[in-house]
Amino acid sequence: NYRFTPQVSGKYFVYGDINADTFSTASLVNAAIYIYKNGNGIRNHEINFNNNYVRRFNLSIACVIDMNGSSDYLEIFVYVNDTSGNPQLNATPTLNNLFGAYRIGS
Image (cartoon, rainbow, N blue to C red; front, side, top):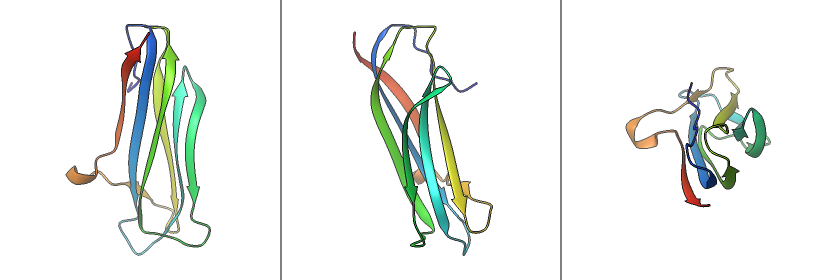
C-alpha cells in the first residue's frame, strides 16, 4: 500500500499535488484531490471547468492533521474526468505528482 503511517504522534503537515493532462485534443471537465485519514475523507479540493475546459491542470491540497502514531494512516485519492473518457495523470519528470507529510509539533 502507499499509505503514510507515522510512528510518532503529533500534528502533521500533509500535502498533495497532481497534474492532470488529456494528452490529446480532449478537454478536462473536472478534477479533484482528496486526503483520507483511516479510510475517511477529511479534506478535498475540487474544480469543475464548467464548459471552460482546459487541456492540462495542476491541483494542490494541504492541511494540518492530528495523528496518534502507528495506528493512524493517511492516503490521497485523485479523480480526473475529460471529454475523451481517458484522462491521465502527467508523470513527466518536471510535472511529478506527489503526496507527503511531516511532523510539525506535538
